Length: 180
Image (cartoon, rainbow, N blue to C red; front, top):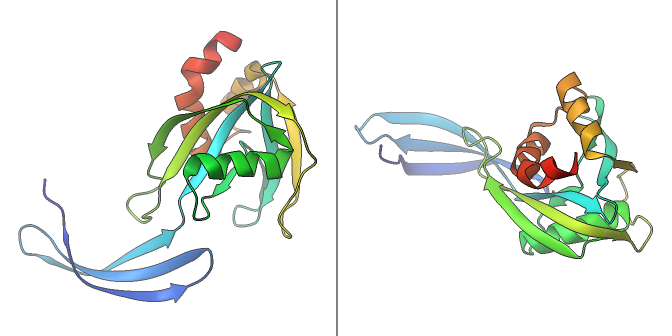
């Protein structure tokens, strides 16, 4: 299968968090897609973090668009830095924990039908509490330490349902299965 060719592109909305553009595209067989809407946003990184006792270092925060409090892995936007630097920074800012080891688990496309960004999933080992939280002005985050076995129960019950977090969890499964 061949790629489509961009004929024209127009940015409809530009914000610090997301841009919306509409593209005119040519398909390989010559058909033209007159309007294809794309969300451009920064790449994202999150981390399945384990402390020295092999407890998961998790965060709980309210997500306005979904109107719910979500249990998540620490993470955030890559701000003109490597994904590993971003996830290490976010882990420290959101939880006060610093890892001894950070390993890239994989890179995903959150929704390639609409979004152009990537999600980087990491595993952090031997995390140690070294600071207090240093949250952004509009963040409200609670830190939770959770046994791996408890997280699987939350997945099964639907209480851990953020799709980007589930993708990272599946990549971390080979490392976590021996800790249950």
